Length: 459
Image 1 (cartoon, one colour):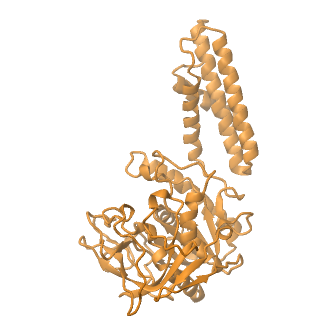
Image 2 (cartoon, rainbow, N blue to C red; image 1 turned 180 degrees about the horizontal axis):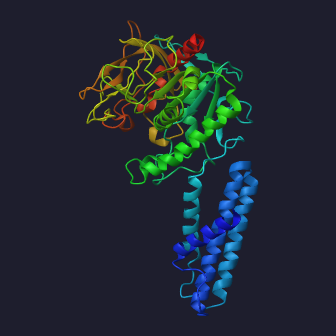
Image 3 (spheres, rainbow, N blue to C red; image 1 turned 90 degrees about the vertical axis):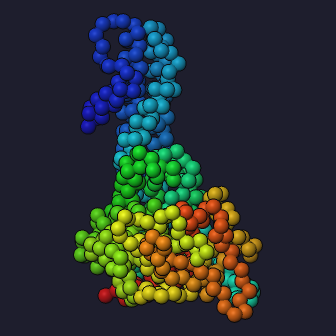
């Protein structure tokens, strides 16, 4: 294994530097370039070995030391080569090293992250800093007369079933490719706290970090490969959960946006055709994604054996929808997910059809600066505001005959609350994703209740 890794790295170094190794002759220029190629190859081999060990042991201190050692050896070898003279190209260490690093990153992206430890989890029972418990998600409950009370959220770690959650796209400005830097997870916290953490008083939450694709990757020629890299992480996290933590427990699969793309594929490849796993899946919350069904049907299209939910007590089914404001319906085909099939829509408060009033939890601040202004901060001080029986939602058809969950402000008689959602904000554009970033928030209270109802209905 060691020899093959080194040989492969030397071959890559040859491609990166344009210099075949083991040159014949004693030309000083050839000898210098050959030495540079070997230095690059050795660094690539050392890095691949270090990342391979880290995937198994998850020791960031040792990984950093190995990277530093590889860097030091490369610099020493490179300087030695140039000091002997004969180099046709000098001062090219940074350029060659950048190519080596890019090559190693490309290889390591095809190797899933390790999930045995805590480093690549946002939430997992028993971990030291479980982000589903480390962050406050209290809410200011705003009554119809605008009076307020504070709802303190207290979760617990021990529950009868599990929730496996994959967050949406959070890297909105990075270059096309995969997001690999987890030194700051503040952007991941926005969706985690708004979409999943509130379920910590209902289920054990498993929420992995994964090397998702950046927003700028969508439409890029390399998008399919980037998505494969991201999916390998999610599948590895799922497999770790299933083998090490599930113990035959029932579970909920949850995702949003890119996270729903990942969980949808996970279900297609691992659960849809597995009767035993399907029987343990309480429900799948595949929200803000591209789940499709034949028009008027609840099964077919995305899944062969998992239908859309049609009743609160129905289990082993999927909840899927995309939201747009009543005054800002989809335009320009933004809600078309398939040339023929309908975009799935299940109303969490009226699974059998028709409208229903919801209990919304709207975030008052965001770590993502691009989302500033989408929801007005009412100044109550808590991270969330709770609006009960203010919004009505219903699955309706757009002008392209595709379904979506329409959000309507329907304050009752004497209700003086104002709608804090700014539907005209650019990030809520109906020509793009509509009220996508609020897909969970509008019905969060109802989703918690629905998950509990379905869990209780399991055989």
